[in-house]
Length: 265
Image 1: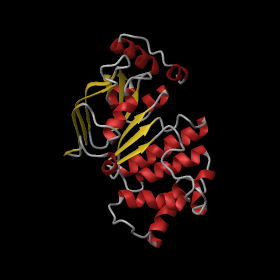
Image 2: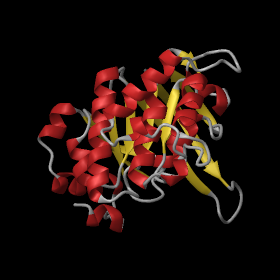
Image 3: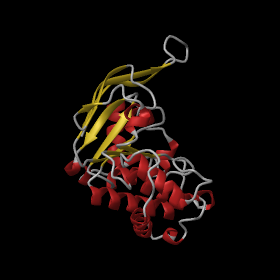
Image 4: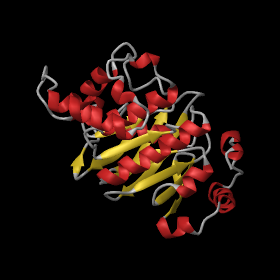
């Protein structure tokens, strides 16, 4: 589904602040893969997502999605088939618009409909049905402004918006990190349910080592803009958090010193 072919990205080249964020990275993601990605701050995880989603162009290399070269495609075109959630629940929704209006925008954008298309009663029924699946009572609050929702409710809505028309690829950039533990567990459970039911290919960045081991069928570990570990489903089943920490040290030639990861053990 996704092929990352020798992509590199350097910020502030030729200056004292030069930073090689992606270093000749290669990655093949199969259709239906659910991959968790871990690594210290500055490892290149979010930079990888920005390159895939088109926030900026890679300096070199090629990105292919579902057989199509998207290396130079702008982000607004990629958004039709790449969904993305961020750590901040405030991103991804329009706070002064209602729940129904936010869902309508997402539905029309990803649904390849014509500009200024109208939302039908059938569409509204679909919105209500999907909101009911969240088990948060939002199906009875469709005319409520999104800015009045809690962080967990807003992130659940953003997840629904990103998948109401199932994307070819879903990018989850620490999408539970800003939530309390109970809300985070609920969002992870919803994520797994939606991804499985729609067979969505998914990449999820996390600082939670338990999530990394428990979720998905593959785990990647990144350091210095490259992948230093790629565990398949069978290897994940036999891997503990202590194993991951040890293998990071072996692959990166340094200790994993990110406090957020260490505290999430």
